[in-house]
Amino acid sequence: EIPLATPMASTWPAVRHMMIRRRSTRVSIFLGITFSVTFLCAMSYAMAKRNSVTPELLLQSPRTRNSFLSSTTRSVPHHLSPYLQGSFTTALRGRQYVRAHGRMPEALLFDCDGVLVDTEKDGHRVAFNRAFNEKGLGFEWGVEEYGRLLEVGGGKERMTAYFNQVGWPQDWPTDAEERARRVKEIHLLKTDIFSEMITKGELQLRPGVKRLVSEAISNGVKVACCSTSNEKSVSAVVDLLGEEKAKEFSIFAGDIVPKKKPDPAVYLLASKELGIDPSRCAVIEDSHIGKCAGKSAGMTVVVTKSGYTGNEDFSGADAIVNELGDYGNEQVTMKTISNLMPMD
View 1 (tube, rainbow, N blue to C red):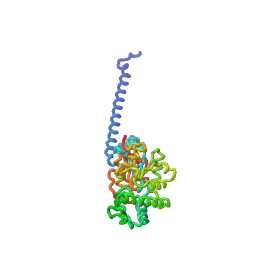
View 2: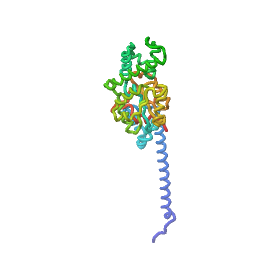
View 3: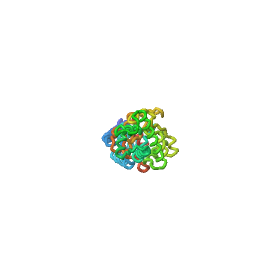
View 4: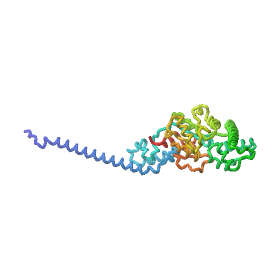
């Protein structure tokens, strides 16, 4: 005889199914809470790390930079490490102007003397002294003295400041206009001497200049040279880059603006002529007055120290390096500069 089905037997499958669903829900909630807590802990750790990652770190060699970021990545749960390879790195770096994937500047503006070529001590100073000698003036600027004179922007302005300090040549007239004419005459002679020195190969480009210019051009970034030096001298230096690169350069130099650096006039003019907002321009400078000009123009400024400027005040610069660096020793790249650009 087959026994009749009891009520308990008929309802058990439904009860069992409901219990399994409740258990699955509890497990899902538990896993969700665990993941959320783990993620929040990782974020807290990253934000605690933020002050130890500076723009200077980004300017180190790839090995140094990657070693730091790798050690940070290993310190968080394994399943979160992929986030650290992308946008999460932004939180690690912390500073509002340092981003894992920055936007390229639209223009890269180079100073000339001390940036493209370390021209001052063995270039312009020597050329000035040769011009003084040819004019029979009997002046000679020593290395240290010329370093002090560099605080005055512009060659003609530099000579005028010097003559005002030590006395004007005795056989010169006292008329201000005639003195200005003779200063300009000496400066033109000095420019010819300097250009000849460049042509003869007496001065060379600084490390990393060609590389960075090539990077800028290949990324569609406009390049220009903004200098207080005579346009002929600047053009001679730019030509050292080679014909293909030199033809990409716009040159803003000499008396093209009424005020010289530290006034921002030359950089603002470049921004206007190139049709690019100052905030989208990056400047490569080597001096305090150049840094001040770039920052006053509202631009991002990278300082590459030169022979005369190593001990100058560069506070306020977005980055400071000893040189741009050739391949294998890159201290500044277009990616570096992008990371320094202001947030949109």
